[in-house]
Image (cartoon, rainbow, N blue to C red; front, top):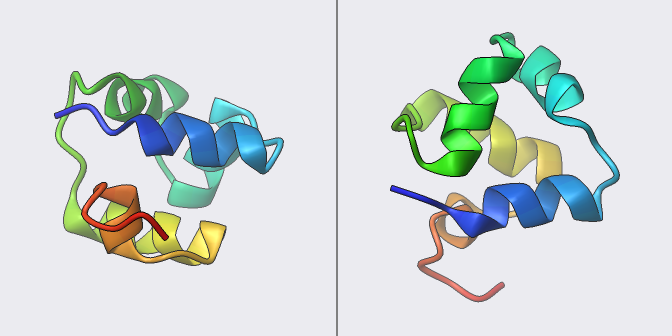
Length: 66
């Protein structure tokens, strides 16, 4: 499943894929696949991303607008 907000949040925060991958402690290519929707994102990663971007998991999952 593709979540466009992963890309938008990363760009809005001026982060590279490598920086986010380092934060998540994963390979950049794995993170890129999350952004592209080619690989499912584990719940633990969604929680870490919500903390990184100071937003909710619902926002990342496009269940809420804010």
